[in-house]
Length: 199
Length: 199
Image (cartoon, rainbow over all chains, first blue to last red; front, side):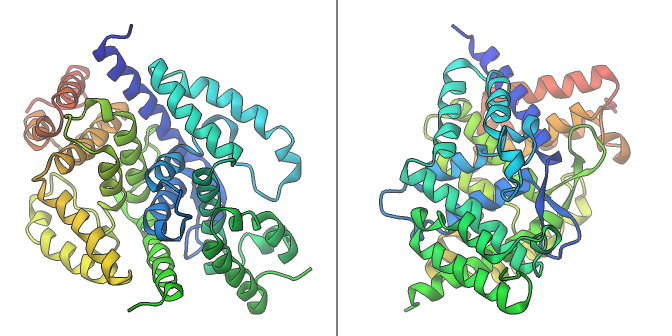
C-alpha cells in the first residue's frame, strides 16, 4: 500500500520526467515554417483538436477519453524518439523501442495509475476502438494541415508523393468520415499548388 | 444556421490559428534550462498535470473540465503575450488585452462553440469555481517545479524573493491543500539550496 504523500511524490516525478517530451523534434514545422514542432506542443494541439472537433466524431466516441489518450500518446518518444510516418526502416523496431520506453516511464507512477494510463496508451496504439480511431485520425490530420500551411514541407524535403500520403492517411476515414473528406481536400489542394508531387 | 461543412472549416481555421501559441515564450525554462518554455507546451504539461493529479483535487472537481480549461487557458496570449506573474505593471492592462484577444480568436469558431469555449476560459480567469481553482493551482505549481529543477531560474534573473513567491502562489491552497503542501516544500527547498533569496 502506497501512502498518499508518496503517491503524490511519484506523480510529480513522472510529470517532471514528462517535461523531456518538449525536446523531441518532429518532422513537421509549426506554421510559418521556421522551426520544427516538438512532440509536447504537438500533443497539446491534438488535444485541442479533439475538444474542438468532437462534433465530427462518431456518436460512440467519448471526447474526454480521446483528449486523455492524446495527452499521453507520444510520451514514449522521450526514450524512443519520434518515428517519421513515411520512414519504413524505423518502423521495423518502433514497437519494441516504445514498449521499453513505456516500461520505464509508467513505472514512475503509483502502480494502479501506471496500469490505467498505460492501458489508455496501448488502446491508442492498437487503434481497435472508436476512441482510438478518432484519436489516430486527429494525429494524422494535424500534420497534413501544418504541411499544407507550410507549402509542402516536409513532403518536398523527403520526396514524399501524394499516393503515399493518401495511403498512409486513409485510416482517417475509420476515425471520422468528415475529417477524411477534409484531409482529402487538403491533399488535393497541396497537389494543385505544386507542394506535393502526384508521383 | 451554419451548414456542417462550413462549421468544420471554421473549426479548422481556429485550430490553425491556435498553432501560433507555440511562438509565445514564457519566463520559465524547460528542465535543463537551455531554452524558454512556450505557452503551447506549457498547456500540454498542465493538462497532463490535471490528468495525473486528479486524485489530489477536491471531490467536487471534474477533471475532464479542468483538462479542457487548461488546453484553452493561454490561447489569448497569441495576441496579448504572456504576462509574467511578478510583473505588476503588465498586469494593469492584462484583462483588457486578453478580452480583445478572446473577441478575435473565439469568433473564428461557430457561434455556439465560441460561446461555450469562451465561457470555460472566463471561468478559469474568474477562479470562482472548484474546477477553476484547481486549474489555477496547477498553473502555479508547474512553474514552481520547473524553476526548482532549474536551480532558481527565472527567480534569480528577476530578483524575486521567497515572500513574493509564497504570496503569489498561496491560492494553490484554495485549489488543492495537497498541492499547496507540495508547493511549500518546493519553495522551502529552493530557499535552502540558495536558489531563491528569502528577502
